[in-house]
Length: 493
Image (cartoon, rainbow, N blue to C red):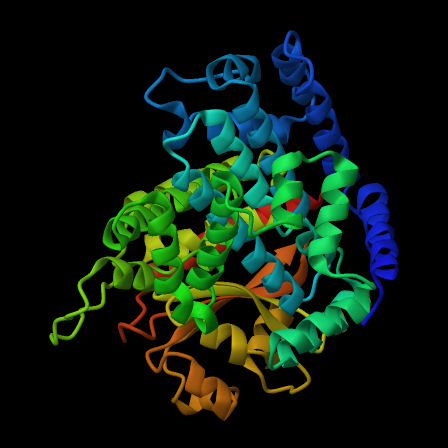
């Protein structure tokens, strides 16, 4: 095991690299905001002016400020200066930090599917933990609520920042963690790769950036019994358990601890947790970080929290996603806006997939990206039913000549595979892929940026076993073509 001084050096090395090379904009924003926090007289006005030059940040701030969670029924907020007055400095500062953190991490380029997915899961856990910690202190003053929100959000900042860098070290460590059978092996692999632990790296960044006493105390003494430190510790534990199936057995134990702290019954706390999770989805949308939604607590987990233990033996009826023209129009309108203003890759893709899923009425859909060496397709973002299976098993080798997915890439045209078992298609699908796709057909379309294919869009109706119509295929093509226009705009300098 590495010595304390050696781990400190490792933490300082990665802190310097993250601050100066990987996330200088976030580091600068945080330091500026912390300086302003010491100037009560002019902080609000300076804060408003300091973000006005960043159009993307300004847009995110106003969306969040006008969301149901923050607006509290007040009239529309149209300027950052007005948001500063209405919301107060602490709230607006935290919105700025959150928005900048999300853009710094979500806009990361060239990450492998495994590393990117690990980053998204971690960010979703952090977001849910922040909302839970704030919920636990709803009877305290707003300043303390905002402090625990940002401290919980940044509780794993060191780990998030590390994965966002990508590279060979991250790739190798990600594989080691996946192969680890216990926490000790996992932690040893992390210390070996970084020369320090993720918690020490977060503490180093928090100290270097001046991220406040609450975060530092929660990292150095997480078992402290003060309300703010206890809420941060338990909120992170519960968020992890709610989003990680391997730790779901811990949920009731953590719920009991949280209920004891708040002096309420566990059943009441479960209801609050469910409402908090629903609010988290809405806030993620307001921050334009919808890609995190698929990693937030699943509805099934939340329902189990809030129903009596004696469950009905009647089979649960699965809800079928029908075609919804209003959702289609709403998502197409959003994409049309993205075609004019440069927008993040993940936002464009997520909006497109939401349109295909909830608007056109497919059971599941996603994008597969071509690997750097262009030898295979790997799932990057998948929405809808059976997501875990798709991500785990649905990788496509492109070396084979008779391959439907490769054909879609080569001809740069959408494909509608109506009957995968038909001889027409059967010879171009491997047995493993036929077992994964819907027997009633699926659709493909090339993911194009400036005429270069970097992946494919996929959609089917496996769960409901419904057939795909001409109108469904046309709508799918419409969404993917408009998305490709937006992605081409986004990459132009």
